[in-house]
Length: 225
Image 1 (cartoon, rainbow, N blue to C red):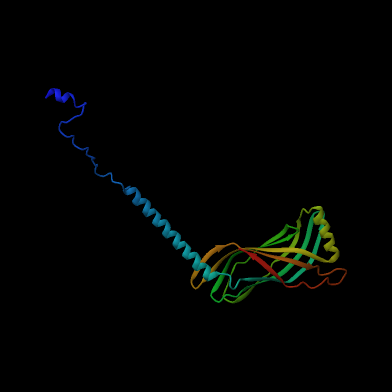
Image 2 (image 1 turned 60 degrees about the horizontal axis):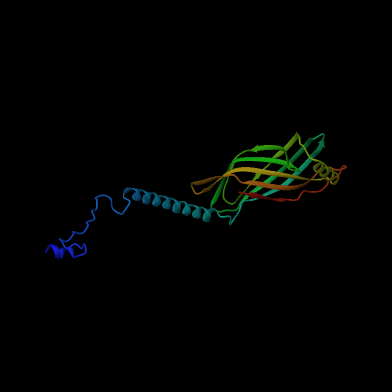
């Protein structure tokens, strides 16, 4: 028997080798356990917040969309003095600004109103006006008065423009309103917005050589949220 076993070319004909067994340790599954649960919960919370905020923005837009925008006009503008001497501007400007709220359901709180007067981009006066509430479909009035003197540093081109306007008796003056407002729908008060209103005026000096230079027209003012 030994000789025959020698001619088997090294092959093994003993008992069969048992198959390899893969052991699975408890608690180490293919999932990520608590970490994945936390991430999933966090994702759901973020998604919910995004949806709620999106719905709130949509509802706000549907309620306050500018179907009936607030309208600003400058009327009854009076300029009785506007002189520039050695970079000092002496002025006396008064005007009426009408604010029309055409909405049936929306009231407006004007919590802060600052009126500023500019010439050639240089501010020469400002006023803080009295806050107020404007009801539905009403018209309110603001009456800023700018009077006094102020140093303004104008370049050569701006001084040349001033001289030309002085000869014509009509000055280009910008009056801007810086507002802080809230809207009211029923008993709900919404927002703290800071729009800016710009009134680009062509104002005749009240007296040029003893006569009126012209009658100022009503000017529509633009506003930007």
